[in-house]
Amino acid sequence: MEMGMVRLNEIRTNEVAIAPPQAEDAALVFIGRISTPWTSRLETPRQGRPDGPVCTIEIFEPWVAALKGVERFERLEVLYWLHHSRRDLVLQSPASNGEVHGTFSIRSPVRPNPIGTSIVVLEKIEGNRLFVRGLDCLDGTPLIDLKPDRALFKPIAPPQQGDFETGQVHMCKKIEG
Ligand code: SAM
Image (cartoon, rainbow, N blue to C red; front, side):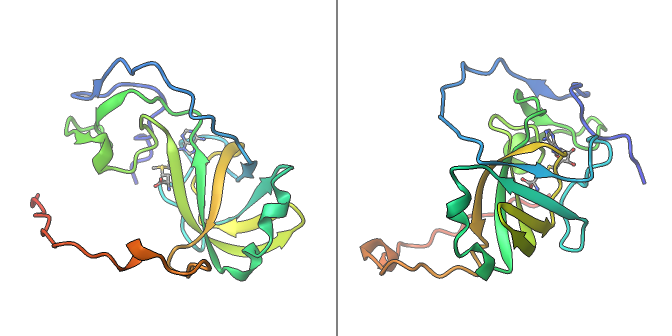
């Protein structure tokens, strides 16, 4: 298995970096911290797996009360901030072979806003700590949000008008290759 192709901060052949516009403050709040076995991007899985190692998500105050009801879901969607990523590439070469792909066509951690998402299996909750499998981030990665896996979630609020609106379907043509 090729282990060398993890980006730290280098630019690879044919990749394109831009000068990013000044960041506007989205007023994100980190609501917790993720603990994983991985301290190097060279070791971290590219995508988490449901049978991967158990990782811990610690929720900070004052958000702990927001965990009420989370235990009912077998799977959760976790959003986290890939805080060591560069943010300026528009074309990237994941295989480092000169072939480049648009940032929005891949799930690389290098993105204008380096948000990672994973569906995790919830093993248990103890106080403000969730034990989950399925993550792929470095130890210490900041947590942005937690939600039930959408496949398991039925809205609790009553339906509203937009829920029944349909539109003409224009099939989006997939380009082969
Ligand atoms: N599952 C998420 C997704 O699809 O949105 C993230 C996928 S991303 C390919 C996972 C990789 O991001 C890891 O293999 C590691 O190289 C890198 N990574 C993990 N944690 C990071 C962090 N805190 N800062 C920067 N890069 C990170």
